[in-house]
Length: 210
Image (cartoon, rainbow, N blue to C red; front, side, top):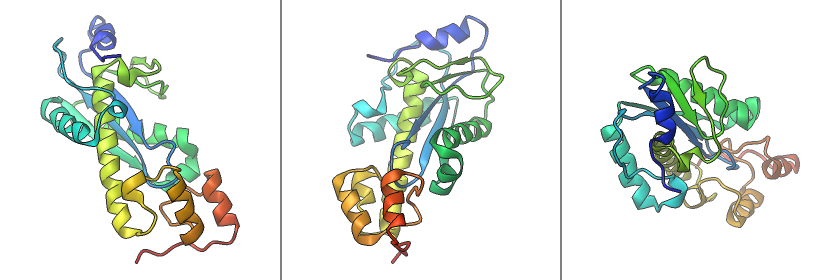
């Protein structure tokens, strides 16, 4: 599927032209933050290059994320760190980070489109599944969320060497599982997630940054 402005037009037809697309990255990772972005694009029915970030290479995502920042009316990115995810659960942390991102927008949105995320808000909301493949605004948010999270994971790799965060971005690949068994649980790991909890319960100490 190729995104367009069909969902945005539903809001535009009601007089809501400042439409924020919202999307997240990192919900299923074992370590690192969950990242949520909100983007308001100009209400101009024109073709844009934005696509669901999962369908693109890292270089393509970086180039398109720069274009999002260039053309957007407003954008914001928020992180929910591992301790917030453990405290609120993944869905609760996603909601909290999304609402923070929306509050940080320099232009207040009049309506929202999310990727199946039914936020508690008084704003008109469309939340279809796969909205990142349907809506330019949500695709733009997905690009910012993914690239900003990847950047953070590279930084965390330097602070917590040995886990391979820069390579797998905190997801549950076999190399990550092996690193957990070898090094124990770091303070960037989500201790409420089963594979991490099992290592923690085996008596592993928190790994200190070198």
